[in-house]
Amino acid sequence: MIDFGSGRFAPSPTGDLHVGNLRTALASWLDCRSRGAPWLVRFEDLDQAVATVEAGERQLQQLAALGMEPDVQPLWQSRQPDRYTSPIDSLVASGRTYPCYCSRREIREAIAAAVNAPNGPESGLYPGTCAALGSSERARRAQFRPPALRFRSDQPAVDFHDDNFGAQSFMVDDFVIRRNDGVPAYNLVVVVDDNAAAVGSVVRADDLLSSTARQILVGEALGYPVPRYAHVPLVVNADGVRLSKRDRSITLDDLAADGVSAGEVLERLAVSMGVAAVGERPSAADLVDRWGSVHVTGWRNTWPLVAT
Ligand SMILES: [Zn+2]
Image 1 (cartoon, rainbow, N blue to C red):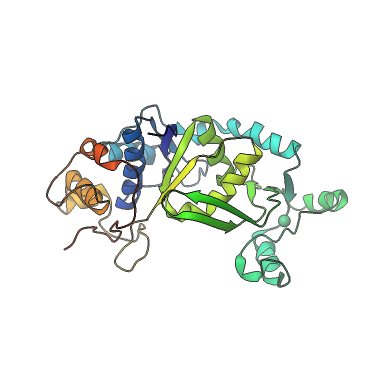
Image 2 (cartoon, rainbow, N blue to C red):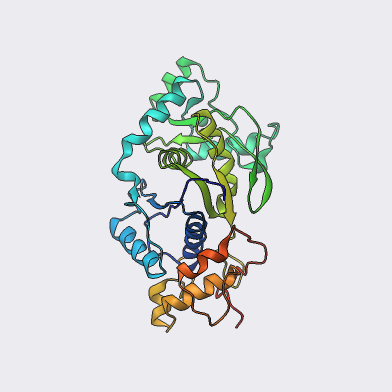
């Protein structure tokens, strides 16, 4: 068994976990348990407008209800905001960043106007408006707006291997690593925190596949080893749309009220992943030896995940 180091589940503590979140957590937990590696929980709570400690504590209880408990105390990003300062400073010092004074609207307009840009207006990629501003123009624009900080990608596309989805290639723009309110941005904090916790195996939902390209670039610029990536499919509703708070009966509390126990939820998740049979009622620990590695081909991804 290859030693990839720790793995993690990194939810935003903004509400109860739903069955899709729980399945992603289970995949990450099984990845770690099957390798004898530590499993960590990290709360991505830097956006203090929506994250709460209460929601995080409830999420830990929901993970525990399915048999998943982290091996060390969970990390709350907001409690150690200074951990991102020195990585950002080193990227600035090495010339890999520039300040961006654009408002959201200016970025939208610049993208729409970038018909001659290599990526065209459909890409939605930041067209580099502020990449080459002179110092006097920066000083002028700073009077109106504090800047965000962008990472200079220096390349149009990033290729990488995903253990489930195979060869990947994504266009990358110069993306924000510190927002203009001073809060470190997602694609920076993920990389810093994974490296600090020796996370070498990133098992997470496939809506983050395209972010992986950006995170690899930041990690390489910081001199970090690139982790192994294994993205897993999202659970979707009957319309094929990823589950969200608009969908009913997808949290453990709601399902319990409908007479569906946590044990039955775990069974449905396990059946959908091809590691249990209907009616078997396995514990999470029962699934570890069946995991081996992640094989997402053939997973059933539409809630309620079992044939009805
Ligand atoms: Zn800009």
